[in-house]
Image 1 (tube, rainbow, N blue to C red):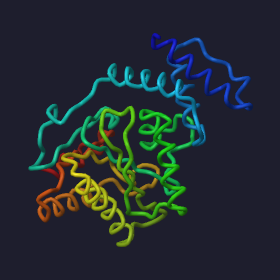
Image 2: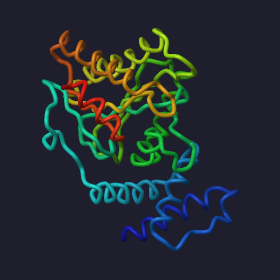
Image 3: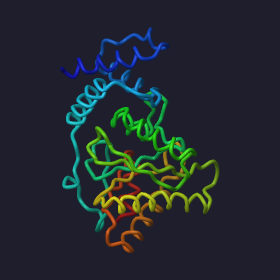
Image 4: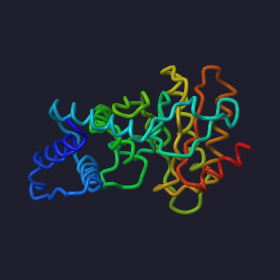
Length: 257
């Protein structure tokens, strides 16, 4: 199958499995079709799905990743010993793991094509990621606590694993508890990575998007927590601080010297 054929198959499958979507029009332009597919994947609840769908979805997403280009650690330059800084799409990184800024439900973002990193990671990984997260949460039987971390497979992402952590939400002024919880997010991911003997993980800017943690304060906490952990633990993985915005890149570049 060509990419166009795969795209149409996936769209039609997701439309056909839901009664309320039967009247959905499929746009003629490929860009809009891709947006529709992502929207359909975003709103799909975690439920059983055909093996054929998964095979075609996997082939489609992996080809999309190849077209975007995969970034390996050897493509990056160290900012400090054991620390890298890279600006770009985190779903392109082939590190052992990338970190997802999740919400407490841990099922990914259900808002179609939302700009959060949770949405981007689930969309790029495929529907299997939500299914695995759902199994974890069913077994846990409670929302994910802030500051902890869970690990899943990465499925169609170029990395091996995804580390999911829930950061603090800021409603007013940042409190010492907020700062401690954000540090816990970074520490929990590092501990989990070390337990799985991962050699390199990529952190996003946890809590600075929809959760409104001030960017510079968050960056200082991230860097300090990683540096302290690396000094205390010989088996600590190397870290990539992944940023998307120019403003975040300038903050990290300045703080890392």
